[in-house]
Amino acid sequence: MKTALTLLLAMAGACSASWAEDIKGDAAQGAGKAAMCIGCHGIVGYQASFPEVYKVPKIAGQGSKYIASALNAYAKGDRKHPTMRSIAGSLSEQDVADLSAYYEQQGKSAAGEVAPATLAMPVPDVLKDRMAACVACHGANFSTPPDPSFPRLAGQHADYLYAALRAYETDGNPHVGRANATMRGQLLQEGDAKAKKKLNFSNAELKQVASYLSELPGELRVVPQSRFR
Image (cartoon, rainbow, N blue to C red; front, side, top):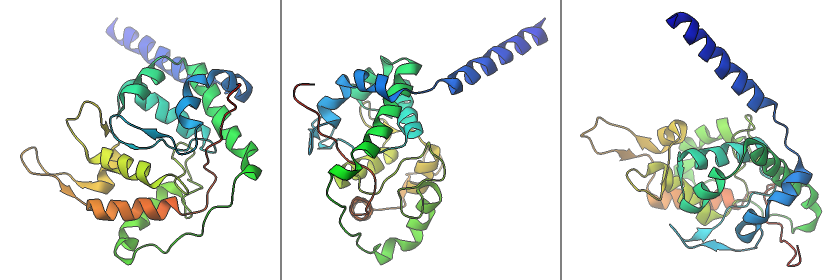
């Protein structure tokens, strides 16, 4: 009986996962669902004020699978941000798919409407070896990740990138923090429960990384929304 129940639960889980993977995003539907997003992500230079002050990330041009992954992480609390968790938690799986498709497509449709990105500065010598590991997940130019569920970083706001990197190092804060084993492994050297964690990058170095990535040419952008939308 126990074996049969376990099998049924496993089959139900597999069917659920398969159904979720089959959900197709509709960019046109996403455009009609983005009203809760454009107040922050559709204003050039808009800054969040809580829990930290930084420009909200550019999401137009970001990969749809990454956007979906990020929204699901906010909904589960793996990414801590009060506003984003509230919004993400209100979305259905279809909503997430539609919004993700919309913002991926929005970046492509606006490609001819933005000024060309500035030339990238050289990688700081002190960071070259340590940033080599970043290429494996985010691509050689930080704009073409080999796994579509990983983010494009090139051209993203420097202050947002710095805040995001710091969040992976943060523990015990109810409003700030990100639970991602890969990123924590790049930023922290975890010890035992009593040992103080060691940072692989100083704050100054993280700012250098964020500044470098922000100056790379990429597909990310902010697409201003009509006031009459």
